Image (cartoon, rainbow, N blue to C red; front, side):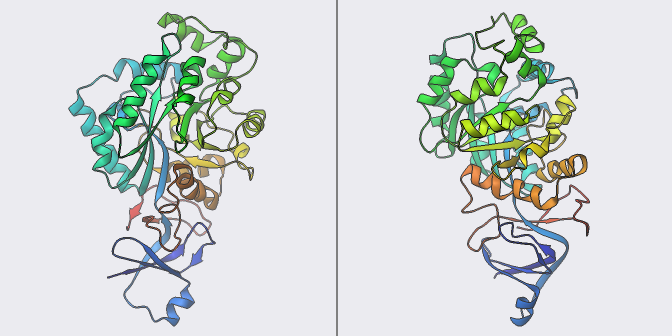
Length: 387
């Protein structure tokens, strides 16, 4: 039998909020109707479940690293990205059983926190069984690295991993500008299919821009420690986004973090690539760099923003509502704007907007109860998942 759910406000997302509205939901979770308070009264709907708070669709997490879940609490905070990367490399190795158990727990945590769909970074095929057995939708980004070694073996292994995720959706993507050579970019483009969506870490630290502009700084030191020579791309006078974005395929692409992106970078990106999304992961930015992007740059009408949690190596929880709360508290972003970023924008980027992202009739988006004040301030990052 269908359920009738009501709260102080219902946020369909693709239309305005409804005070004391009623959601009609099938046993399978499909949205059958969205009623105003008056319409529900006219229909004399009975057995309405009433809640204090607001009802919103399930959240979409467009950037996660499930494979790093076993590193929860192991890496110090606010060390800066180069030091964080060193710690990941030093501590990542673990038995498969340990890694899988941590991924299963992280997957459950996302479900409990009202997340319905995830864009997940993977370097190995280990997460496939977790994703196949999860109630969440996953798109896997098989992330490739390589600046000073032959690119052909890298792309061959990446394509093998990507194809091994079938029947789950997956694509091969570059990790970051400082870790991918022009040759590897070319091979990624050659192996990108028309249906693929892409992702790349962008301008996560000031050192990344410095390395491309002047060829100096923390990334130069990291290259030296690894015995990797600098390339012609390092020290060109132009920052990281000028290096990688012209080499990206034309497919829908997610730029992740953007912590040190400026207005000129946004203008360049919009002119360079016609199908861009910008993912903000504020709690990870604070954890690693103790910094946040200049969020107002991304509030132009032509800029499409999504939200991500990053990994449990760089976050205290996997909660999109917690990311929304941080942006509201520290950047004063309105709840309605944040909700678009957390739901429909992410669903469109992942290509699953026919099922997720809003309370449109016919979708099965999940239903979350959120505690919101009368002035639309997120009072708690606790989510009650109703469906």
